[in-house]
Length: 343
Ligand code: MET
Image (cartoon, rainbow, N blue to C red; front, side):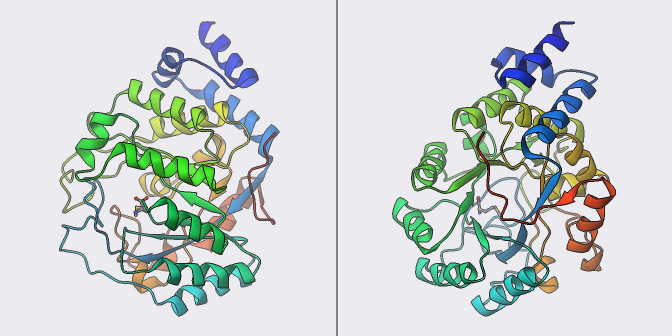
């Protein structure tokens, strides 16, 4: 009874306090949360699933995030950088198959000058394609220049809003600077995406509830939420990793709190669970990010294991696989750039 009232409150008012969120996150049978999230998704963003073509253009990284296979100190992976020409070839392919958004992602690679990135962005924009960047923490000035060149959106997950856990997992980085980046991006007029890694060692339901409160507070336009998958040759390689159910709860509660935003069913969710994309789409998600990069590089972008099978065309996040999957769920493929339509 109480639970039904809580869910109804969320579904109508899109607001709830932290203790109530913890109660919902702890529910043994979350099916009513999922159903409510699916209704809200349908009502506010409809049946369209927006595709965002992902290009992982460099796996060099100067950071040392404990969970990530690309961390600087990991000397066991081969590093690569794509040439601007190669990036643009992938973009053109994406355009030719109807994609309207390209996501450029990399480790924190100081090699690429802002002016180089600006030129790439300008070229992409000529094709009438929205540009999302996911290249980490930069100065206010750099963010401003990239915006001026035409970048539309920026993804920068907070990963966890628990400061103590954040500092433990990100030596040499600061929680305050990450929040500063998000505030800068907002102020500069980007659509801003953030999100969390779910199932980190030491992460509690209270912390996850706090993440949700944070997303609501900063009015995130996009939220990427996925399971923590332990990766070899990282300090967390022997940890357990996040489970799918808690990720789905976070997705569904995000949709209920922020009804009109763009929420991907993440690649990590699909890697963790064969039906991950479908489950995500049924729990509030309305975006999927097919990888449109170059096969030989995809194999080297090892954020976590299982992303790329021996034959990359069999990857869960291939465009072909994703298109089929969306149609199989009686959903449609978004035809426009898929900006957030604030209600
Ligand atoms: N390095 C960037 C970040 O921390 C991009 C995603 S991590 C591969 O946000």
